[in-house]
Amino acid sequence: MFKNITFIALFLIPVFIFAACNTKKSNILQENDVAFDTLYLSQQIFLDDNPSKSSCSIEIRLVYPVASKKLNIDTLANLWTSCIFGQSNTEISLQQAAKSYIDTYFQRYRQDAKDYRENRFGKDPLSALTDDSYSASEEDADESQSEFYSYYETLTDTVTFNQNDLISLQVRRVSNKGGRESYETFRNFVIDLKTGNILSEKDIFREEYESPLRRIIINKLLQQNGVNDVSELEQLGYFGIDEIVPNKNFLVDAKGITFVFNKGEYSAYLINAPVIFIPYEEILHLLRENTTVWKLAKI
Image (cartoon, rainbow, N blue to C red; front, side):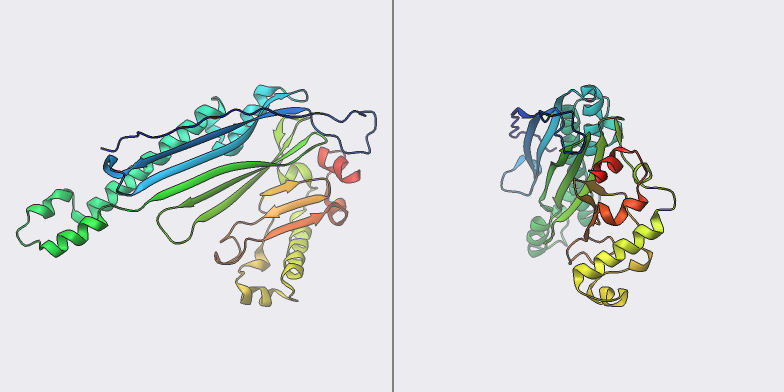
């Protein structure tokens, strides 16, 4: 039985972002009137409640909205929680969703450790100790192996843009399950404060946008890597570039749209994840007119 006896820290630090004074002008960037707090949680457990054994730890650092004049705060808070923890958590507070996430993370660690021990020793890990044919050296070796691995994870978010009725939110997760390399992923969201929706590519682009946008992305990859054709990209560790498509993982800002392709997505995990920035002037003909993003692009 693993006991969850550990340290939890929670700090709420108000951060305020106010609207620009001159709201009559439509051709300038204007800050959204949204107030934010920060949430910090840190927790750790040890196998068999023994600090000398392997551990599982998690750290969550989040910025989240607590007041908004442009969108009902409950709506915005639910959107925020769904971006970070998934749609199933929209009816609970961010703090509750974070605590549930931590509990689930620890439950999975306990189950992984249990499965590991059962696979190594059979159904009863202690049976090896009563087996006369089991040597002392084997016992010592298996004792060290039975401790399983240490896990850790960090979950953070960043507001990368917060103007003209749009908020770009990036959620970063770094996890390690005992290996040499940590696994890092980025999930990106754009919230439209006018509509109360998380924008999709179809909300931003005209119909049949994928083919011309694919060509732009490929050309950007070629330029970034200083090569002339896709075969040279493949030699660098990329794959499937001819079939690359916009991956719905994007951010917007005052200058353009950024697509983020995580490690292992069209590229070997050992190379840097492709991050493709496309200025508005290169895709203005693909944007849906009179949308919030289109208006931002026209400023």
